[in-house]
Image (cartoon, rainbow, N blue to C red; front, top):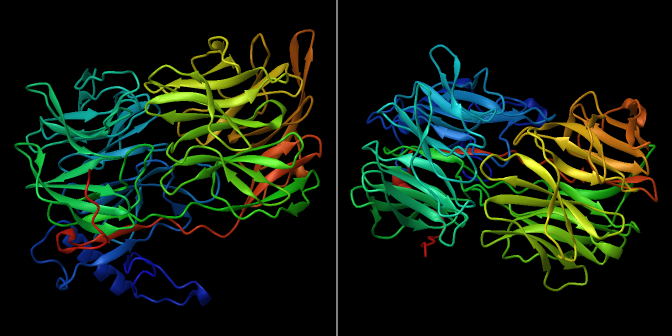
Length: 616
């Protein structure tokens, strides 16, 4: 039966929700699955006769699972017979893991040992899958299910597997590409960058196994580049926001606006020709990480993720008894569930999601429901939120032209004032302000290793930033206590949904003390009094503990359950705590978010949809 939004039929078992009435028999589903698999791998005579127009279907995931956010999660096997997908539970904070589906069958098969996997890609023979996890590049052979570590990869951003037994990969979010044997070993550099902030990622080897295409980010000319290892020459092929797929004998597939486009490409000259043709509309891609969530085959098979509107939340107050008071604010797509309440409790600074992970800063009047966007819409990435001195400004960090700034925006409107610029090759995020309003604590991490450290800098820009705390494990989201004598922070590896909550004295850090015996849900912790800290654990229960400084040493009390030990409702997220009124600002899911969908197209060569968007 056609999908309501894309005109696609379901590939896999699915039922109409009303009364559980089946709308497609298993025999029909199986037939569609077999036909889709045959068409994806390019069989000249598929299991079922091919219709005059391309078949479009959506892949159904196992019950309770969905695609993770902000990571490339899809890889189509070279022959188009299988698809590897990262899936995570809809409820809870467990990390994603890999599943494989043979498109001639109905079920996804979980792959043990792949927890936390990101950016998967296939071997040329379709018998193995490589992925990044635990700061390593790993491979899994489907024949025995054994996961093998190949080499270090602190923050992997894609790879490509050669038939010559090597893998070209991006080991980090910044820096050049590397090459390693597919049996493991010490990697060697392939490409080099001009600045520490430049990022080479999402490589794709050409059929000769030597030359490659890759995406370059954080430069004056971002886009897809070609590289020839014989000459060491690099050349821009396609300007733009993200990666491209090369398909033999000569097509480049890429995305512009909402459209997936196909354009003739000469693999010998490594040049585009003619004009692009739209083959799919409403295609999701990430402006932050540059990936397209999908894959294609040279014989016409195509899988891609549809754009899914970000989850929207209503704002409300919730007191310490769990009673809620709704606020007259329109539902917002709150990015990273990040919000800060003003000292007087009348306003909140929030981070707002765009459709492709963009983030903007806004201020919401909690009494009148008026929202004002402060950040420059041309700057699509802002991180961290603070109220400035006397509540007259919002401090955040922004990425602009490969520069990371701490910047202060007046809440009355107008341009922001940068007061600190980070070095190239690092990311920064504003996190806390000293009680006297004179200095900001922020997190800085290298794009190469993604290990965050805590720094401080004067708001007036009068001096350089100074390192407050640096350890091998990495520290995130430092929050100063109201008295300014304790910093709470979490240790949270990249893409890990759980974290360890710790505290240290301020301004001179000594040995840290762990606060919670269990993992904290992401960065969900708040000062709820002068010397009391609250947090949400991974089971969605809320706890608190006293944090007192005695003779220069921190004394942490025993954790106590809040809300009678009951977990938060599934639709509720804590955003911030207003100490004066003793209540949480919470986000309540407005409507159940439509699950992300993967669309299967039997033959993109026959497709012509959407409006063409010619690259500049």
